[in-house]
Every structure is written in structure tokens, then in C-alpha cells.
Image (cartoon, rainbow, N blue to C red; front, side, top):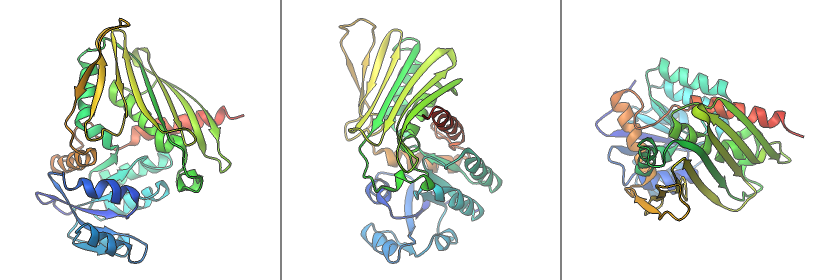
Length: 329
């Protein structure tokens, strides 16, 4: 394994939308990560992207980037069906891995990815960027400090109307609303409770390709904390979370996209006309927060700041999908 320098030298396996729109711009705010290389399997794309974003090295295939001694760690943003192959290849090359969510199309593949990274002594972090942001940390602390009393209900809605030619409607690519959007609600509920669900139920509307277009998910956590999640590729844009206690509630809207003025609304009483308080958070880009947490994990030798390797989230989501399929009419 390459010993990381003071600044983590990042290689990126792909030049898709999330890379050019989110990750590369966020590097300007990162305190500890620098992009030193980018690869694409589409001829000429990596060279052009590297030029546009002042990245010193470009590669015409992923294997060449993984072989580079200039790279300490890699970000893997490709479609879900490719995660298993490239996470394991990166681990064998001694590179730490930040892998887009969901970690894999199945729990078995995720388990193999986690094992490969552990065997090769590299960090594996699933890219749930929202968890490392200051707003998420404040949100969790507010709940843990009892500002809304005992936690009772978590509701999450995440949807948008997808282009019907999008790869996320293809089952062989790991598509489906639950994998792409519902995973956020599952992740949020586990993050806020620090528990795993004891009971799972789900139902879905299915698309002609075989993936779920809309899904309703019910999770019951210890102490009878109830979570309701809905996700959809055929509904208007919604990205909202409500956290309800027996003595107050919190609304986070948009839930996973903090924006330039991140905040959430807090009601510290169960009374109907109780005034609302707005809690402001640090406006640092959440992808930069994610990169810095990843770098801190590399430095420490273990994941930090609420980051996860994604295995437990995968376990829950696979059970959700199985229940939805069992209830299919």
C-alpha cells in the first residue's frame, strides 16, 4: 500500500455527472484532498476533463490509474454493477477507496468488497456525502441531546421524475428507486438511531424493466422508533425529512442537499402553536466534507465522523427489496 502523503492524492475512475458537477468543484474547499489523476474508458474524455479542471494526469483506462504511484486513494463513481470489480482492483493496488452509494447490487458483493479492503489494509468508505456535513452532525446532536424528547417517528420522502432512458431503470446496472433514493432514508434512520431495524416491510410499483419506480418502506427500530420512507422515480422532486419526538419535532427540507445556507427547523414543544427555531449550519460543501472525512479516516486508519463502509446499509436494503418482491402482485 502506498503511504499517503500529508495531502491525500486522489484518482477518479470516471468522468460522469456527479464527478464534473459535484466532486471536482468541491475539491476547491477540501482541506486535505487533491485530485492528481482522472481516468475514463471513453477515448479522449479523461484528457479533456483533466484539462478543464487542472488535474495533472489523465488515463485512458482505469487499470493505468490504479497502477500509478502518484495516487494514494480513488473515488469510484461508476454504475453500481461496476463497483465490485473496481473496488477489489483498487484494494489489490493498495489504494484507499471512496465508493459511490449504494455500495453494490447485492449484500454478497458488498461483503466481498469490504473483505478485500480489509485484507489489503485500505480504507473503504461508502459515499453518503450528507453524513459528514455539519448540518447532519448538528441534527444528530440535537436529537441525542433530547431537544424533541424521546425519538418516536422518522419520515423521509425522496423523489424526482426520471428520464425513462436513464441507466437507473436498468436492473442489470443496479437500478431502481430504492437503490438510488430510498437508500438515503435507510441511511438517515440508522444514522439518527445508531441502531439496526428489527422489522422491515415494503411495497412497490414496478417498471416494465423490472426495477421499482416507487417504493414505500417501513422500518421499526429498537425502542419502537418507527420509520416511514417513500422514494420514487415518477413523482415531483421532493427531498424532505421529519424527525418526531414525544416533545417536539425537526423538519429538514431539502434533506440531503444542504445548499448555500444549510439549516433545519426545530420545534421544542408538542404544543400546536409552539414557535419554530431555525438552526444554521456551516455552509461548507458537503462533498468537500466527505473528502476531508475520508482523508481523516486514512490518516487515522479507520473511518471517522459517522462514515461507514456501507455493509450494514446494504444488508437492510437487500431485505427491503426482498420484502417488496415478496409482496408483488
